[in-house]
Amino acid sequence: MGKTLPANMRRQLFAFLLLCALAGLTFVQFRLLLIGVGLEKERFDERTEAVLRELGRTLNEPVPLSDGLVHLFSAGEPDSAATEKIALALDSVLRSDLKKRGVSARFSFALTDKTDGIVYLASENFDPTGFKFGRYSLLLGSRIISGCNCERKLHLDVPNLFGYLLGELVYLIAPSILCLLAILASVVFLLNTLRKAEKLNTIKNDFINNLTHELKTPAFSISLSSKLAGESLEKGDMDKAKRYLELVGQENEKMKTHIEKVLELASLESGRYTLQKERVDIHQLIGEVAAGFRPQAEARNGKLGLVFGAKQSVLMIDKAQIKNLLGNLLDNALKYTTGVPEILVKTGSENGQFHLSVSDNGPGIDPVWRKQVFEKFFRAPAGNIQEVKGFGLGLSYVKQIAGAHGGRVELESGIGEGTTVKVTLPIA
Image 1 (cartoon, rainbow, N blue to C red):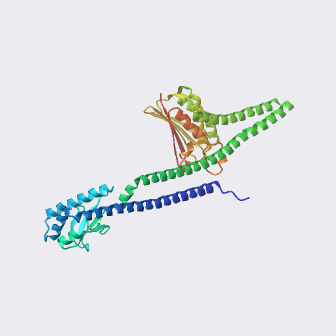
Image 2 (image 1 turned 135 degrees about the vertical axis):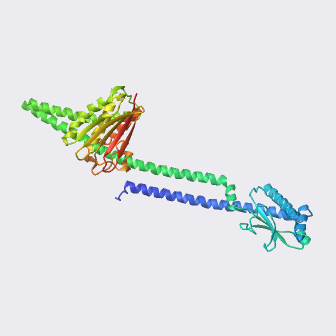
């Protein structure tokens, strides 16, 4: 059997194929756009040349404009006022005829000798540096030639012709661009979804492994203790049997705590849980919770200090949930501190807000993972993930509880700098 590509390589291959398809589609759209511009230019050329031919026929007849041109070309020193008047008249005729044929482009014109060397008359917006002589031109007819005994050419130019043609195709270009943007957005969304799905799958597998690890230990202890308790009862050793049964109860409570954490977090996220708020002195509650964790810190020659700086400490809170929140913060601080633990709990109050912070002297968290540590089941990667007990619910639970109380959670940390988790709750 052939080997299956790793998930990340499959995702990269899929992304590459999608980008190739998008590039191909963009190229096709670009080619179609060029074809459209070419066809539109042909139509524009036909209309403009038709206008010039019509003007040529008009100037070959005895009309004031042709008479004015004959006089202009015959005069040795042309009058500037007369020249301007003829230029305005010629501009008006060209503009009117182009409009009749559906051409609204901004144009300029010039009347030159046959070799385009001398400009005798030009439109107001004529720019000799950018003017394209010969783009659209008309050799004036026999009436002008015989009248002034000279040959003159009329040149018409459209500045930024390509831009004008694109504007005429906006009804095709706009939908094409919108479609390409929609496809690009869909590709980005799909790739992002695949990335998140892959990440979720990894987190799910880690969670299952850690949950299995967390539940197997008490389950094994319960099984072994039950067996030993039974043997002690058979021998009539009631003291040993009692100790084993107490151990069964303790391990059972551990399993119950793990399961309740998962269920409580699910209830909070779904909005099914209703907070049972009451007036509680949170300083007293912190002291009670800290007393339960202090022996663990002292057993490792560490300290768990309390600094109560808040002037207002009576809050309307769900006592059980805030107690769990405090327990999670202290549990994390002790678990993730590898050496002698130095844990500090501080409080403060200002502007109707109660501030609680729990700091440790652990290894800290890489800034890359700082936002993700509040995601459910996420554990910042560091060596063997099972070296530290738990399965990534602690800070997610803390965030949910704080949010349910109208508060917020922040984390400050850096590699080798320890971690401080700050919880803000409203005082009411």
